[in-house]
Image (cartoon, rainbow over all chains, first blue to last red; front, side, top):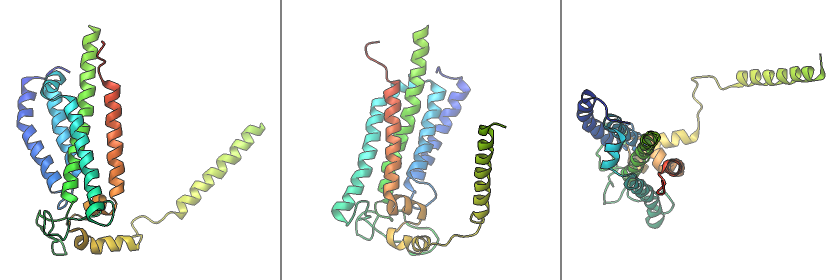
Length: 159
Length: 91
């Protein structure tokens, strides 16, 4: 995939930060508003795929290697399983929410009922949202990146 | 008619009648199917998990194993795609 016209690249430059902010907002507020790690990660991965389409796969793979994305995805998976195992260590069971109700991070329990709540709530749920979000960002983007780069290099080999 | 045609017609009629029966027996659309677990989660999710979003508290807390399986599916898919599309060094 070669790079597209200057109009597309300029619009991508404007839209990319907005999409990234929206995606990370969806991830960070997963325990308060609709959305979560999977959905926000899909938004951020779409923004990265937009950059890939606009600037071409060669430019993008020069900026970020797929091996680093693999490491990022493994880190997300290890963080998710590690948080679940910490529930076994500090709590009573695998996936036990050991932070909620404590005095530490994310420990506040809000008043029951609908309405706005503090972001400092919900125990391990925000941390798990971040772990899954990183995992989904890296996973979805590395699929698109590797496929696009393979198609480009296949075309060059045929020439 | 051959034996195969007769047998096929009978088999098709039985399957068709079965599907019609199932469609008539189906739960009516839009009527709530009450269960104790739904009520428990709706009543207690804010006190137990502290999250305002009940769906996230179910996905990541009450049914964490389900999310673990989803994450494993994604991990396997990514591993397969990278394995399939990698560039061989000897090329």
